[in-house]
Length: 359
Image (cartoon, rainbow, N blue to C red; front, side, top):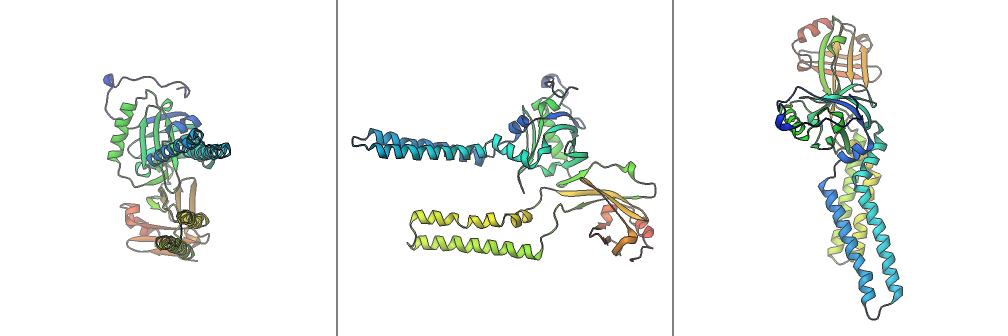
């Protein structure tokens, strides 16, 4: 298939509507595809409309000044200058919130979201291989909080902790029909049961013959430290006290409207100063799914972008009970598995590792 060839037109009325096991994806994602599919939240659209309405209203001031019988050209020119400055500011804000502006910023943070893409959509979610991923990676449907099918393609996105969009242009799906694809995607999402996880494509064939398979979910972010918790509480307390103080002074007549709105913005600078801690505290879009195997000598785990392995003889802590396996190693890594992570082979695991001793 030529990825640059427009998709073959399909007539839904003459096509089998049965949902396939997967929707194949092969092609190339361009920056323009991301711009078309990134989408604009309704709040951004409202704000853009408010900006243009405000500009239209302020533009009437110079016109009204010119029509006055005792007009002063100095005042008229001053009003024109104010309107031009305001127009430039509002245009910059509108562009910043536009799909083009947001897609450019997203590309700077994640350049790998454009380029060749191969994979498929199925009941699990998206499985893809691109320039950003050397292996086939999978993201479950629960990861995507914004899923849309349009005539331009498919949008898979989330907004927290930072906006991220995976654009699948229509040219990457042979015989693309937005009507059919929308029905099939709806069916996939309705039947999805996996939590929000990202993982490497499973490959049981890589496991040695004496290995025992496991699958588990681990946090994508380490938990907050005590110091980070304390700083976030301090930031929140300062902001709350500042807002209440400014509002109380305003109600008591101690602040005029100008100073009220000026001081109202001041606590927001605390958010800027604390952005690193707030970003750490924000929940991740998904957790990591780790799969691998256990042998008598080591444990091997496959994570997105990483293959982790550790030998049992190097464990600094080892705890094996009737319902969990917990081990820590000298390099700071560790693993905690439960019965459900290993399936019905828990007895085999306990027998295999019964002789492990800490150095």
